[in-house]
Amino acid sequence: MNITENVQGNVHQVYLEGRFDADTADKVEEFIRKKIKKKISHFVLDMENVSFIASAGLRVVIVLAKELRGEHKGDLYVAALQPSVYRVFEISGLNNVLSIFDDTETATQSFN
Amino acid sequence: MNIRFWGVRGSIASPLTNAELTARIEELLQLGVKSGLTCESQIPSFIKGLPRHIRQIIGGDTSCVEVRAGNKLLILDAGTGIRLLGLDLVRMSMGNPINAHILLTHTHWDHISGLPFFVPAFNPNNKLTIYGASSGLKKRLEGQQAPEYFPVPLLSTFKIVQLNGQDQFQIGDLQIRTFRLNHPGDSYAYRITHGNKTIVYATDSEYKELSVKALKPFTDFFHNADILIYDAQFTLLENIEKEDWGHSNMFYGIDMALQANVKKLIFTHHEPAYDDKKLWEILHLANEYLDICRQPDTHLKIYLAFEGLNMTI
Figure 1 (cartoon, chains in turn blue, purple):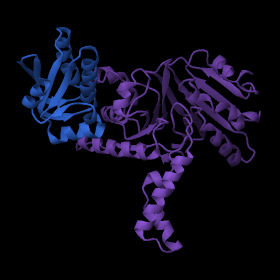
Figure 2 (tube, helix red, strand yellow; figure 1 turned 45 degrees about the vertical axis):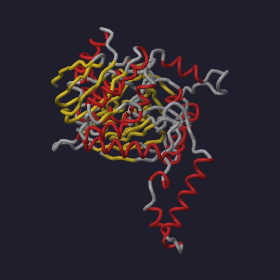
Figure 3 (tube, helix red, strand yellow; figure 1 turned 180 degrees about the vertical axis):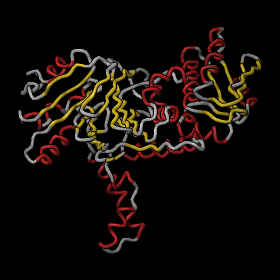
Figure 4 (cartoon, one colour; figure 1 turned 30 degrees about the vertical axis):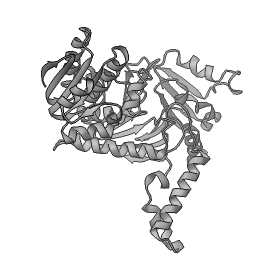
């Protein structure tokens, strides 16, 4: 899993590349938690280059979004999902509680 | 080895309600009208073609699984499902003594509340042994049948074997191991091996750390099981909402079973608030998830436990 970042205003755009599963979910969680500790609370998770998401990845996304909304008055938006990855969000029901956008730019603008 | 499910609900027994029955009959009749049923002879094939949530009841009794291996009878948990199993054993024994080994995961009500109604215990000729790693097991089981709660004390037919949670023992030619799970007050999984066949019973467990490393002790215990019976009480979302309730979901179960090279994964301990239609829908979605995860060498199959589900390996 490769993780890169771009900052636009108070929104941190986090770009993931690779499989988001039990081997890599920890890395993503750790990356974002380090930012949360620095009082950053608005994230867009760009998954254009994520080919597969497993339950470990789903858990990280939903747990972080829940925590950001509750304790930090922020949120974690999800953007640019490949169709098969989007389908996993649908069949797990997470699409009903997460904000999912077609692209990172739209997601970022939505924060504003 | 043969297994049969007698109780598949978690938390509390949840019989079919009148409202659910009425909704089911309505849906059934609507489908009958749509299919153009005109005579009785069409009924059997019509019934066969009905969706499972109409033609079949998943069941409302709490945890109990019968395991037959060699000439041994094992009973996994003693929830309300053990009541009907007891009656079946008495009928099938035709007066011969019953020798059963009851393995308890823990002593929450949904895993022990059928014990006072287990009819074979009333016959002193029967040999019934209860195993469990919950501390003070005998005292707990006696407490359930204290006069304040039940008129009959725990019967002396039951011999109690206190385990410690990291056990390795034999019942006849069955090899049995225990392993502690993540559940409030602890629950213990059983790995039962007969010859080259293995069943793992791992109910009432929550998994909050899903990395390969964090799950390794569990996937090691599940490794190469022919059947893994797994607690999937909640949807994934509800699992996260109900943190520390000590349960799991089908998605985590699939990922762990794939990691552990399990052959058949059976989901049980169903949430009492979920009706049959919802449970079959969740299984359908879980199958789709499995297809997405599937690799060329994936042979895992998943099942929903229901009362009467019988499987031989």
